[in-house]
Length: 99
Image (cartoon, rainbow, N blue to C red; front, side, top):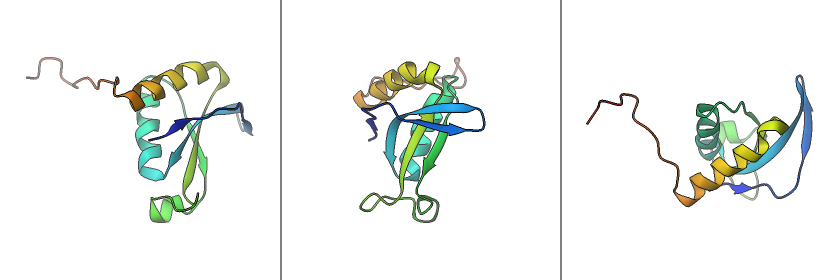
């Protein structure tokens, strides 16, 4: 599972600086974390080794993906990632009336 990024790294892009909140170990994990954050209204940017798109796994750092968010969302994103890692995240049904 992704580990929260310990430092504060800022990477410029078209809309301004973003901070790396975690590093995923491959495309599958990156998309899982991205889905969680974006479902909670936090826009994400994935930055990383291009090989992740070909192989989808990590070997000696190849395929590692940085997940970045706006600085204003970083604290909430890290809290959500910690909840995911600890098993406290609960995905709600699309249909609240479903059994």
